[in-house]
Image 1: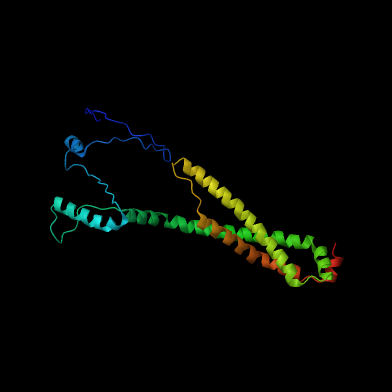
Image 2: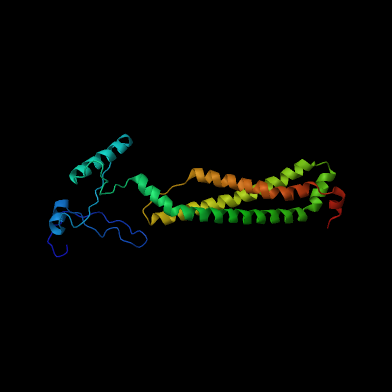
Length: 227
C-alpha cells in the first residue's frame, strides 16, 4: 500500500456497485499502523461509534464529546475543534438537500393530478353523450336523479382507482427493481399506497361530479329523441 508492505489476513465480502462506484476499493488496517505510515497529526480521522440501545444514544454523544475534549486538551469554555455527526444530523443535511426536490416533485404531482382529472372528466362527458338515450329510457321508467348521478360518479371513481392500482404496481415494481442494484431490501410503503388510492378517489369525486350532474339533469324527452 503506497509502497509499504502489509500482510493480508483476510478479505471482505464483495459488495455491488452504487451508481457505478465501487464499494470495495478500500482496505482496513489498525489505526496505529496508519499513524506510523502517515503521521499522527497530518491526517484527519473519522471514528464511528454505535450504541447498544436507543436509551444510551444521547449519553454516548456526551461521553464521546467529553473524551475527545480531554484527549485534545480543550479548555472549559472553548469551542470544540472536532465535529460530531449523528444519524439525525446526517438526515437533516439530506433533508436540506432534497427539500427543493420534494417541492418540485409535489408541483409535478399536482399538475399530473389536474391533467388526469381533466382527462377523466372528458371521458365521462363523452360517456354521458354516448349514453344519452340510455339515460332517457332509465328516467322514463322511473329512475331518480340521485340514482343516475351516483351511477356516473361511481364509474368515475372506479376509473380513477383502476389507474391508481396500475400506477402503484408499476411504481413498486420499478422502485424495487432499481433498489435491487443498490442491495436495498424490497419494500411496499403501505401508508403511501393508501394515500395514493385516497387521492385517486378524491380526483374521481371532484372531476366526475360535473359529468354525473349533467347526466342526472338531462330532460328525459330530449334524451329519448337524441340520436
